[in-house]
Image (tube, rainbow, N blue to C red; front, side, top):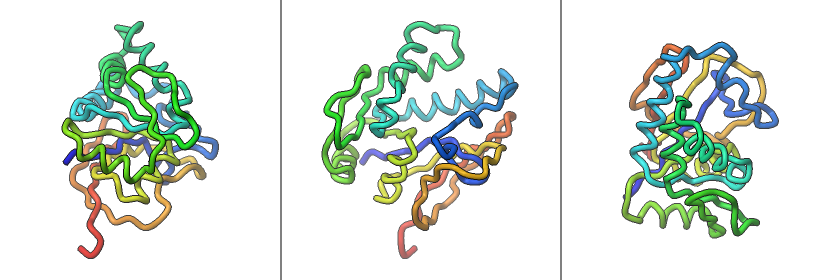
Length: 197
């Protein structure tokens, strides 16, 4: 069965976005240096390469997510993010929405069915694993439904005091690996601990 992997940026005080979804804290001006940037991009490319499908919430899909990465993939060969952009552009993408039936984006389809039922059916399809980046509300729903199999939380050395959280109830996770990068970011891989363990 395919796994659903979550990759998400988080502050040290546990937020994945500012109160209005701001993410200006992800790359503080002047950082990271080119070597540190390549490290974190390399991690993103490796994780995306292990997957062939991206799951998106409607808000993220409608925000220009696909257009941004398509532009980097098609028109910015020297951009350090180009290898990841090509993967994102070429992957199958499924946006979950209760209101929209189509959204702009290459290889993008819209799913209007029940979230848990649809994701479980996708897990049973053949292929590589699946990956979700956000947004916060969509990821929170996946977590609450116990649909995330692996958490890759990129903790940033910044606190913002208030913002959006993806955890709405108690979750016990097991740390499987941890990697610190020169930028100060730390990537922790967690897996859920089954209830009753």
